[in-house]
Each structure stands twice: as C-alpha cells, then as structure tokens.
Amino acid sequence: MGVDRKRRVAGGESSAAEESLKELAALASTAGAEVLDRITQIRPTLHAATLIGSGKVEELAGMASGREADLVIFDHELTPTQQRNLELALGVRVIDRTQLILDIFASRARTREGQLQVELAQLNYLLPRLTGRGVEMSRLGGGIGTRGPGETQLETDRRKIFRRIRRIAQDLESVQAGRAIQRRQREEVPLRTIALVGYTNAGKSTLFNRMTGAAVVADARLFATLDPTVRQLELPSRRRALLSDTVGFIRKLPTTLVKAFRATLEEVRQAALLLHVVDVSSERAEEQTRQVLEVLREIEADTMPHVLALNKVDLLPDGPQQSETIGCRLLGEHAEAVRARAVAVSARTGFGIDRLLELIDEALPADPVVHTLFRIPLGEADKIHFLHERARVRHVAYRGECCEIDADAPESLRRQLQDFVVQ
Image (cartoon, rainbow, N blue to C red; front, top):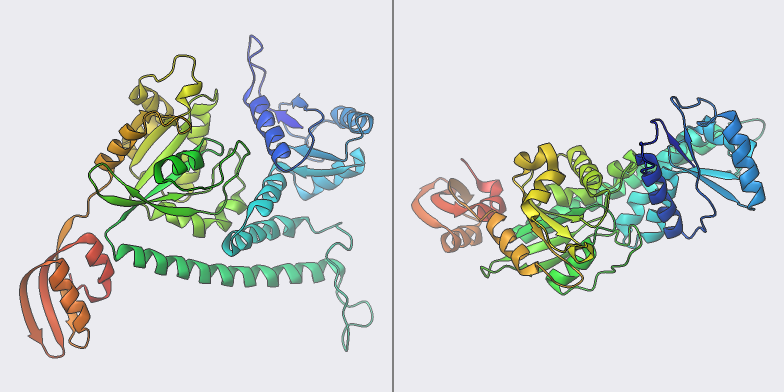
C-alpha cells in the first residue's frame, strides 16, 4: 500500500510513488512474501490516524479478506498509533517499509558485527512501538520486590530494551576499535582503499567479483550482500589497492539503519576513492544516484573523489553511450564537487573493465611525500630503523632520551608513525 501526495503524471506515466511501490514489492519478494496485489491512494495530506482515508481502509480490508492475505505492507513509515489502528481495522498484521528492510537485513547478516548492527536498529525501531504489544516481550520476576502490582509490563519491556541497546552499543564500540586496528595494519603497507558504493542491485558484487576474482554472493535479490568484503586489486600501473564491497543503498533507507551501520560505513569514509556503481539500464537511474549521494552526505562522504561505473550497458538497446555525459547528468550538481570520471561497463560480460581500471589508476591518489619531523624514544629502535628504510632522512639529532629525525616520508608511513610526529 502506497500513498502518492502528488497528482499522476499526464499521459499515464508512472509516478514516483508507483515506482517506489514496485520496489517495495521486490523487497517483499526478497523477504519471502508472495505479493498478491499493490494499491496506491492519491491524497493531498496524510491521515493522522490511519495514513490513508477511511474509505481506502475499508477497501483494503475487503481486498485483504478476499485474497486471504495475512500481511499488509505500507510504503511509508507508520507511527505506532497508525500501525495499531490499521491492524484493528484490517484484521491482519501491518508493517511498514522500515520494518520490512530490517527483516531482510536480519536474515542476511552473517558476521557478528552485522547481526549486532541489525539488532540495534530493530530495537530502536521497536522501542516507541511497545504500547499495546501485549506479552510479546514479557519477563517473569521472582523474589522480594516482585510481588504485588510492581512495574507495568510496558516499563519492564522498556527497561529490558534499554539494557540490551546499551550492551549492543558497547559491543559495537569494540567492533569499531577492532576495525580501526585493522585499518592501521593495512596502512602499514601503502595500499589505498577503494570503496564500492551504489544502489542495491546495481551490480556491485558482480563487478567486485569481476575485478578481484572473488566469489562474493551476487544475484538479483535486493540486499544480497550485507557484510562488507575486502580484496586486493592490481591496477594497470602495477600498483596494488584494496577494493571494499559494501551494503547497497535504497530510497527511504531507515535512519536507524544508517546510524546502526555507521561502523561498517566508516570503511567508506576512510577510503581514498569511491567506485560508484549505477545501473544505467534502470529507468530510475538518476533518482537512485541521488539517493546514494544523500546517504553519502549523511555519513559526510558526499564530496569524496568518485569514479562512476555505468553498469549493465549490455542491457541498453543502443549499447554503450557517451559515459561522461551520462555521468554528469546522473550526478547533477554534485558532479564538480566529487570530481567524478565515468565509464560504461558490463560486470556480467566484462565490457569496459580495462578502461575502468585505468580510470581508477588515474583517479586514485598516490602516496604523497610529506616533510615531517619525528621525535622517537631511543627505546623504539625498530621505529627509527624502519623510518630510515622507508623515508628520505634529512637530519638526525639526539635530544635526551629521544631521537629527532627530519625526513621526507610517504603519507602512509607518516600515518603509521603518527604517535611520534612533532610537525
């Protein structure tokens, strides 16, 4: 069920709401549901109690009863009151787009980190919706202080959820610390990271497999890849880089998910270059690109250098087109800010992959040499030796218990010895 707050486009063209509803049906199928029907209502304003009008509620109840449906999915995020009112009126379970996406993520998470992130998002979503949920999260008490009326069930449930949220937040902090250690270890070798980003089902995993020879799961289901994967990539200049496959984005991506997956999305922020994959065969390519840039803006990565991979050109009737023109049109006002270069590719057939690697090689920042003064304790002799091996030392001076080294060092080495940098 979707609501369109705008009039239909003249000539019978699909509105944005209908496209969003079609995507919702694909999400429902991905979650394992059998989609029986789709319906859209055009309203100037949303109904406070039920989102849709009373007449449409009756029509929807009749459809659900006639088709023997046991679930109605709304394309808008429902308030707790709207969800309860709709379930009472329709006589079936009601969920919204956010809850559906959370369910898909829960079924796809494989790593401990992914499971924690999904559970955190689910708990934050559930918290304001506890009222009226009955005994779904009940817990029996025992001992002194639990006899008599005691706490209400709602207060008990909220207390349980708050405790669990705090525990998950602590666990995720440990995960973030572990990721930071992994990043520092990767920085010991001067390898730049390239992060694959894009709308879900744009072909990121297929492209990742094509470029690295990996065997990441790649199919037509939405959110087929949830847990990030990192593989080494060799560029035409013989330089090596790390390619990171990340979770796909989608329109109306729940805010709770963006917050929960901040640890994973941190990999995007730390990358030297974004490889933005766009499905150019989609009629909504421009809107999907805009949605990806919006999520990148939320994590403060929207101005990072881009290479735009215009994927699935083998599905276009005319084949490859002028990629740079298409890329500028898709990025719109962001084209100049992200300094994007575009190339038409087909991850399935391998078309354009060589040119894509050349563009990445050109756009990937080198490891610049920085004039730096290091002050290293004499007890850290291995660090002093390492610096002499990896940098051009200009001057060495011994002051007390420290060795001051004036050197021209690669940026990667400077980051590795950050604790000893004076200026």
